[in-house]
Image (tube, rainbow, N blue to C red; front, side, top):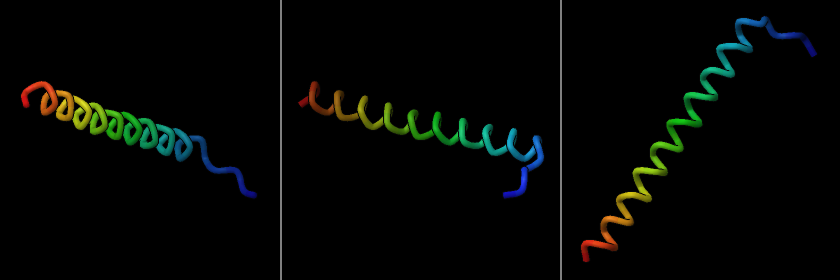
Length: 41
């Protein structure tokens, strides 16, 4: 197993973090939408 360059690891970690927060944002939006739909009807 070859060691990946530090910059590559950094970029991968950063992209992973971005993706995770993006997924969480989408999840929050969906939940909020659901709550609004339930309370309005």
